[in-house]
Length: 255
Ligand SMILES: NC(=O)c1ccc[n+]([C@@H]2O[C@H](COP(=O)([O-])OP(=O)(O)OC[C@H]3O[C@@H](n4cnc5c(N)ncnc54)[C@H](O)[C@@H]3O)[C@@H](O)[C@H]2O)c1
Image (cartoon, rainbow, N blue to C red; front, side, top):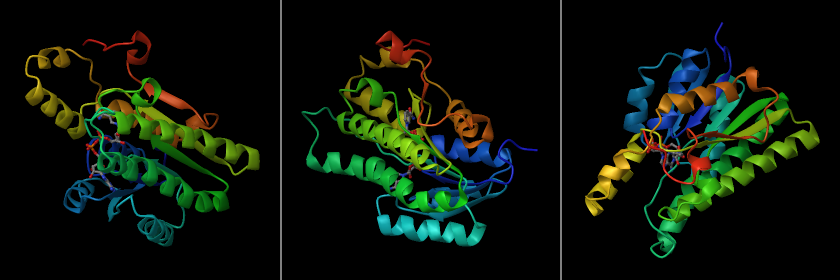
């Protein structure tokens, strides 16, 4: 018997990185996983290799797309037990470099996408009297991050949304749990892209960056599995940090 046997899970940003690793982990433990992403080619190719997974194209920045997508999942599977809001983009820009376009692009995927996901899954889970929403944040939402200004702000908004959804649910006995996950650096295409930009912009600084601790996508997937399962039934409104002490030491943790 798998740890999430028989559950129906939606994962956004599922074509790559943390969303992909989480989709694999949930499916391996018995869940039916609807892998949603804006990248159809990659998402379809990945889903084809995962038992009990299917791909669905979704641009999380569109509220109308979210509504149609959730209606389709409910029609096909009858329920939704887990929603992992994992889609995200990052732009390397301090507040001084952040244009309105950068600000809006980052918030549109992260903040808006998570808002629409939470808002439109709520009636489904409320009717079931149960459900687990998991929002992917970052340690940047706790400490701030000068070089990724809009991203840190978006993750902080998601952290607050998470706690508001969780408390709304307990106040009204909806039976829905909502938790956030706050990873530090994890080895995914997003991080590799950031590292490449830094490497090109400042080759002498890069050797220092290479000494910084980096976790594996599976480290995050294991936390997703726990929050998706009944093992975490008493965990609600929590911010689960996966950082090997990075937020405590006020600096980078070396390998
Ligand atoms: N990798 C890290 O170090 C790290 C650390 C903390 C938090 N995170 C967060 O984890 C999440 C996943 O990041 P990752 O590292 O796996 O990145 P990634 O770039 O590997 O994957 C992100 C996925 O989101 C999808 N996506 C982007 N815009 C979308 C949209 N509008 N609609 C639907 N899907 C969209 C992409 O196509 C991609 O498949 C993000 O929210 C990120 O901010 C990552």
